[in-house]
Image (tube, rainbow, N blue to C red; front, side):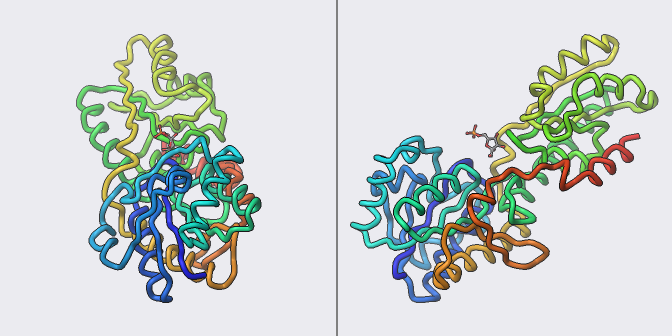
Length: 324
Ligand code: F6P
């Protein structure tokens, strides 16, 4: 391997820049060339390549977003799109790839690397923390801290006004952000897709919960079956007309901001490990960290969503105990 291409794809996450920096500096350390691919798989199809050196990643470890830009690319789902991508890689002498992203990114990488026997290593870059094969994904720690900071502020005003707030957090298919940040903010209830709590249960809990609490915070994962915070808000308003109820959707602030130290360190370690893995001949695997050890997981396994009820029944119980 002589020239590694690096790209970020799918939804961005804080720490992607730290990961790019580690891939670039790791490649240079092993005397390899490294090429940046702009806008994820779109950049492969359009040959949007930039040469990178140590200086091109200077002063980015602390920056949110991704200097390589990102996209959700439909063309890469087609055979023709992938054929163009392969042609461009060969013509530019890029002979391996490091792709930073989540399940959509790895699904594309898996198909492409099978089709063309092209070496690809994945890095888990998503705020959702929903990948098998790593305790944490790059960006998750920052995102849950962003949620905690925001909800602490909501708690202040909720407490002043004796209000019940329904706060929606991200996680289309996963309740990991809701579960951990919900515990972190002392939420009175947490709704996640994996637990299937349902609005009826929630109504029951609000009805039988402690009456002496001035404020109540209910954290809802956007992917929960209840259908989002506004739906939950309507149902609660209908059942509790005397409660003062407000809805707050945190949205994309969860994807931005300077990465936490934990995310920077994780990204740095995994980025260098990705380069070393390519040099050892590994491919079609995601590099993750489990119990402090570097672990390699085939793309096909990494993208199987973690079922939070299987991995975290104790956390769900903890949330319930603490909300009394
Ligand atoms: O996968 C990351 C994520 O932020 C999800 O939590 C969310 O459902 C989705 O991306 C939002 O995507 P977009 O920015 O394309 O609306």
